[in-house]
Length: 124
Image: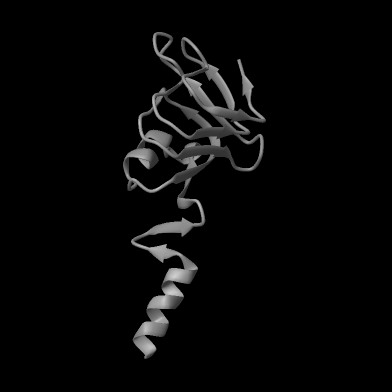
């Protein structure tokens, strides 16, 4: 009985294997000022919907090739993705149900390429 209660509590809290599970799936936080990358966070996740909160300036060109990915600035307006390679798109989306919210996107050949829902973003 206690074991069932404990298991239920863990599922309700959404803690499993070092990842946080919310209503939207897996939630990850990326602090680019600490050297973390969106690419790494994306690759280290399962196939469940993925929400990545981004803070600081990430200097990377990103390929989104899996469905159900959301990139969101944390805090709002506080995340930047700068594409250092001018021959590649800064964020290249080749998947369905991608959302980019509140980020500043700079550099690269094109700021955001492909099908994505873009909200509250500045693309330069």
